[in-house]
Every structure is written in C-alpha cells, then in structure tokens.
Length: 315
Image (cartoon, rainbow, N blue to C red):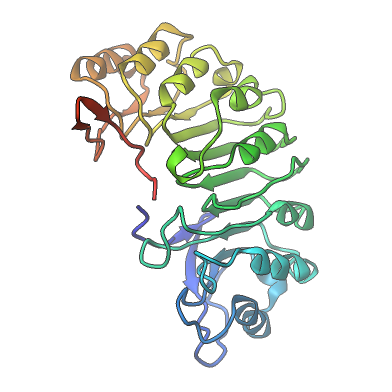
C-alpha cells in the first residue's frame, strides 16, 4: 500500500505545480516538478495541466518531472501522458528524470493504475538518467538500448512478464540501479525466475551496483538463482525484500557464493525463522554487511489447513 507521495526525486525536492491558481515562477534552485490532476472529476485533463506548466515554467530548465494522477487512472491509461511528454521532448533538453504514476492508495490502488507503453519515453529522451513507473496494469516496454539511463524502477503489484523480459533484453550500459517489484499473480504478475536469467547474468548491465528483485511470490526461487548469479560479484546493494521469502531461500543464499562484499542486503518483509535470521547475521554482519531482516507486516494466515503468505504490495 502506497500512503505517501514522493517528497524527493532524483535527489531533488518535489514541488507541486498548482493547476488551479495563477502561474508561478520556478522555485529557487532545481526541483522535481510534480504535475497532477485529481483522479476523480478533475477540472482539466493532464495534458492541459502540462500545457499550463510549460507556459509558466521555462521548460528548458526542467530537470525532473513527477507525473501524479490523471483522469480516472483505474480506467484510462497513461498513454495521453506519455504522448504529451514525448511531443514536448524538444522543449525539455535538461530533463534527466521522470516518474510516471506518483499516486497514493487514496488516488488509485497501485494494481488498478492503468499504464501504457513507456518505451517512447526512453527513445525520446536519450539523456534521461532516471525512469520510474508505478503500476503494472497494461504496462508495456520494448527492449531498447539507452546509453545514459542510470536508474530504472518499476513499482507494481503485478509486473507483466513481457516487461520483465524487455528489461532483461535491453542494453543499458550506464545503469547502476535496477528495481523491479514483481508482484503477485492475483494482480497480473506472470513472470518466472527464468525471465530474470539475463539480468542475473549481467552481460548487458556492466555498471549495475544495486539490484532489487522484490515483492515476489517466488522470492525463494529468486534467492536460489541469485546465489550463483554472475552479477552478484559487481553489486554493492542486493534487495530481495517485500516478497514471500522463507528459510529455504535464505538457506540458498548462505550456501551460495559469498555475499560479504555487499554493503547492504535487504530482506525486509520476510517469513524467516528467528534461527535463520541469527544465521544470516552471524554470516554477514562481521564483514560489515548491513542487513535488513524486519518481518514488518509479513503475517501468515491459515485457512482450512493451508498457510497463506502475501507480498508486501499487492492491490
């Protein structure tokens, strides 16, 4: 559940552009501009709000844009948003970061957000360094080569396998940070650990130092694959959090290649036993690895003899 809007993005404070008041001058210093309309009965469509923004703020100086809500995002896709941004790409030479879908649960549940094909954002903005997208419903991506992208984030309650495979097939030589919230089958997730194999091989991600493969129902399988993955040697941060991680997955991590070179291993929201948590601490903390092992709201439910476990972010 997403309960708060972005306060900072791409290292910049997020400033809301007011769509219903007189045009304003840019805040002092660079900011990430949040452009949003109410998701229910908005006074204007998002492209119109974007036009007001471009008229009020010199677009040539804009470094980061956070797209909030658009009209009925639970029914209408982000295609008009993507088209408006792509059409204005020539006016935005300084743009380095884009977030599409900064909405809380009050605006729209993450699994209800209808996205679209976001490939054009990468092709239209070759200098883009940071792309984040929230919501996996109808999300599409075509494999690309992008020379300058450094951070790529897909937050979802259910990430389509086609998107996972497109990320895995893309050439991203400058990417240092990759974050995928894989989600649950109930909300559209249909990827498998085999889809992640090219990412774990690392051949197309020579600069990657942080990898997050999280929020997955098959977190144990991911952990087992990571245990022998070539890309781990170049990582500083490994994030396998928010998923259904059991002792079997943690055991695979301990039995696999050394993880003592990591700065951080994030396993929060897990279903590990106290004994396994102690084994992880004993194996990694003496080498300086910062461990996140909080189980948070990972609670097991039993019904009719069956134990049910959930990812951190579903609906």
